[in-house]
Length: 463
Length: 101
Image (tube, rainbow over all chains, first blue to last red; front, top):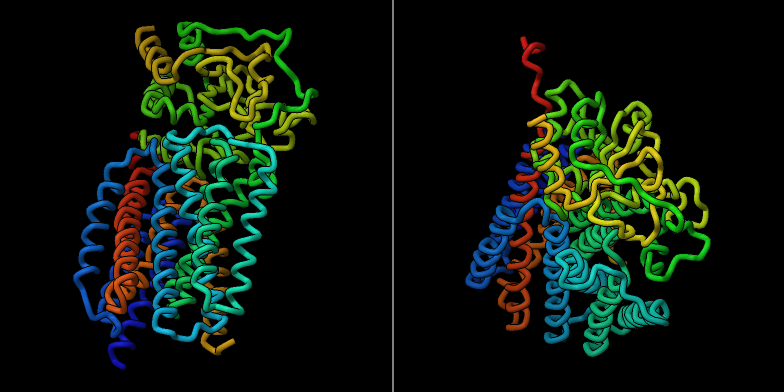
């Protein structure tokens, strides 16, 4: 009894430290310390669990802990910041896998021992396995798309939504049946299989630009699966940690879909950019862009008072964050000011651009949210757009036929002048023309962002 | 529904509520660290995996538990390290030399 009490006490300590750790993330200065305490909480809970009365053999536990640490440590230390979206996606996979397997082991053991499975237990196990399995395969797909071994373009085929809904309904139907009649292993494993299949199918039609929402949703589902594990094995710290994770992922998905002015349903079943846009959307016919030479761009930037840098996924692809900082330092040395305008869905996951720029040692005071910075564009001499497209497309404000109409955007078109760094004139992810590029005040600097920025830095230094 | 299940639901709802209140105040600046932090925290499912792997109930449970312990440990170890690595990068603007006293 005393041992059980001690175990519960460690769980309570862990729960408190987790909540305090998350609270510390509301302030940048306290964040690091808070999360270190949360890690300590985890350690305490694990040590406490090892004293659990049910645990009688330690060899497999030790093997798992050692193997997991051997894999986890390099995943924590060596993964570059540019690979962070896929790193986060795969961590959802691991989390959900653990929850799913515990659920399967629990169900298997009950059936094998002929123990009774109450409807409440079956409901918990069902949620655990449903959320867990679909997160495992969904996160795998997200990881594949971000790592680019699966095409980042949406994959669609006729009858896709009907098929997806059918698979989902099948899994939920089996779940409902199992709650009333839990003693059917074949149905349980079929449900598991359908949930796995649904995860694949769900993410298949979702393209790269919608990844922030998918990753947030998977974050939420992985948390809910953990929470369900807590219900199944009667463990409160699991319920609490899972609920925190679930709430966090849910809030992030809402923020992301608001930033794209789209509903969940639309993102999950809309297959953005797959079908050719309706004929009414504006095209580039009869318009031409002006390009700018590196020399002219350097001159303009060197004498600007206020430059607002607008980073997008292209910056991450080119891994040009350090060159951006070099350029900014030169502009600042010449007496100018540099700020960074971060759109909530710039990049492939929530906060992607902030992490990249922080890695390049750019102070976070200069990283501005959309609401903070938008009123400053009219005062800025040069808006420097690096690898961003849809988040600066004025069509979101003024072209009702555009698929991105209504999405909040950065008001780059209100700047005094605009320089857009871009590889080519290919359309952005959404496959729509960006009229910003055709404005008289806009000039294009074509080429790889990294080499263009390096040349700019050289030019300003020499000039 | 058993009394335990009711209490568990209470815990779930209250924890979700606390999570909602706390997380809505996290600035967008730290959204990526938030994601990796919550992911690391939910690796506490490790405690469930430990029981599955170590209770010696049957071979299937032990093997599945072993895989679960491995995956959860990957997240616990890797998740907290990478969160710390990210948070370490966020720094203030250095104070201007002339304004420093």
